[in-house]
Length: 186
Image (cartoon, rainbow, N blue to C red; front, side):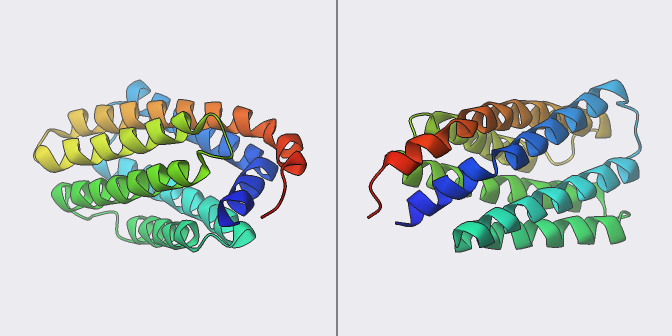
């Protein structure tokens, strides 16, 4: 069953989710610590984050044969590379780009959580991080002309909340392999 293989891949690689969550929290802290960062610097930091996040999703997608996760990972890598090579993209275009990424990511996380709900009892962490991503995307679409400082703070809030939920999920998944081995394979 595909949900069993996704759960197994996530459980075996829980530390990747932990690293991903820690990086998101660090990114969020940086956004609050240096709110006067230029938009170009923020773009570069975001590009690096999207690239690493995409690589993580590709690894999980390939190892679990979850093609939706793989697709999202490839999209994340493309977003990261594009952002790193073209940091001068306008703020409004970047906001729509980030908003679309957050919306798609949130939808995929909620779908994955629904698929895993029979195998794990804490899918709520993945659902909440998906909802946070969707809310973040909607906020950016609703107010794209907000000031650069507001964008930095919104991105910081998103990164902190997403990072904390990913860290919670990682530590929960750390205990999952023993439970999965006892389940019958269908």
